[in-house]
View (cartoon, protein in one colour):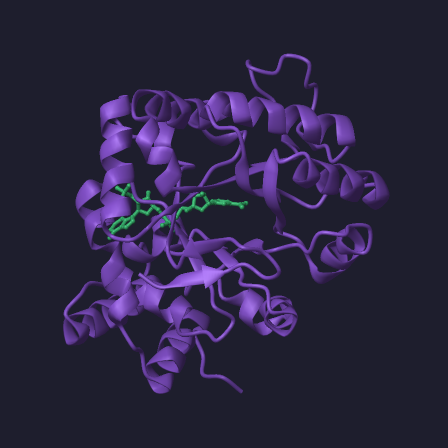
Amino acid sequence: MERIQLPATDLSLSRLIYGMWRLADDKDTSTSHVQAKIEACLKNGITSFDQADIYGNYECEKLLGKTLNESPSLRDQMEIITKCDIALLSDKRPEHRVKHYDTSAAHIRSSVEASLTHMAIDRIDVLLLHRPDPLMDHHETGAVLDALIKEGKVRTVGVSNFMRSDWELLQSAMSAKLVTNQIELSVARFEAFLDGQVAFLQKEGIPPMAWSPLGGGQLMNPSHPKEQALFDALSELGAQHGCTADHIAIAWLLKHPSRILPVMGTNNLDRIEKLHLACSVELSRQDWFALLELAKGEEVP
Ligand SMILES: NC(=O)c1ccc[n+]([C@@H]2O[C@H](COP(=O)([O-])OP(=O)(O)OC[C@H]3O[C@@H](n4cnc5c(N)ncnc54)[C@H](OP(=O)(O)O)[C@@H]3O)[C@@H](O)[C@H]2O)c1
């Protein structure tokens, strides 16, 4: 599988990333099953894994950590991405009165320490700020992120769900270069292609990560005629390319020259085994626009 070099670093990620948001929703959360999913990814060249402190009500990082404790040789074959700054209302965090964001140095530092402990690792490969915090003091946040890199606790830093202005604010107060912006992007949610978000990253040479690349499953489970027409077109192209609708939806993202890294969310082992098929599909320009037209419900102007 193709690898994507993160700018100004010695770190590369696999073109497809495996997302662990739904790890705790799987009916089987045993370490042997988590291990089987990781191994299915590795076997197919997917070496990059996406976590967040809050996933599974603060449990998903621990599920990964238990698995790595039992099979320590996995760690060196993986790049681990995790996120911080969202503070959930949760029985695990009784001190939270309201859902909020926290980009204070103290919170980021304690969150990183907790993620390292929970995942049983000594360095995070990519740390992302999960959401832009309207109260972010960019000097304070930038300084702690640079310090965590210097201390070796974090290898590289990026962001998620940031608009260009949030990105520029934080970057202006950091010496390390931000390496990615993980944004919602799929045939179902294509707006970032049209509103300048992807164009900005492309200009900066920053590979975007696409979360919910199958629209969180919505693309594969159409519930009204417009979604059905899009699903039918994806399936038809799948048949032409010897794969299925989900692979075409991913190939649609891979075609973009900004070098998008889709973050896949399936818990299904068979689907994980076949994700790599998306990387062999070359969609034509007209097929790309045909899918955009079906998603928009109208032709481009
Ligand atoms: N940064 C952020 O703010 C943010 C937000 C959300 C997510 N994320 C990241 O993005 C990752 C992926 O998000 P996601 O899970 O929403 O991604 P997704 O791949 O768009 O959706 C996954 C869902 O689609 C279903 N699905 C996949 N293939 C299917 C198929 N062929 N037919 C029917 N259903 C299918 C899966 O069910 P099965 O398990 O049954 O296959 C699962 O419920 C997360 O794990 C997380 O790492 C980040």
